[in-house]
Image (cartoon, rainbow, N blue to C red; front, top):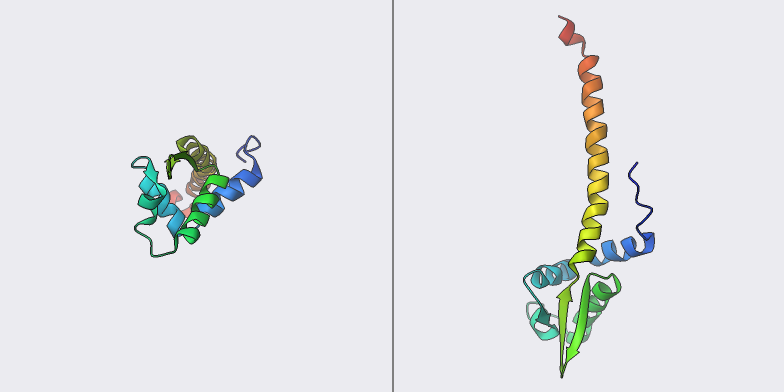
Length: 117
């Protein structure tokens, strides 16, 4: 089984919860193109600004987005290192399952009665 002891389970839960919403995934996609203001991020969504800000807060709590105030404008930035941690966690499991499936394939090929004929 992959070793994920270095990952904080609560942090993983927050990150995957944050990514479980289409609006928040959209914000991540927008920020992957570069830093943006809250107004720029909110523009494509048909919701009140306070509701949109809740999505940003969830992303910030999950460590996926950071924001800073520049005058009267709040600017957001993607935290790529956090995404890389999630990718690493997923990759560990993907590799473990690929190895299991390879072993199963080897076993099934070795025990295939059709091969003996």
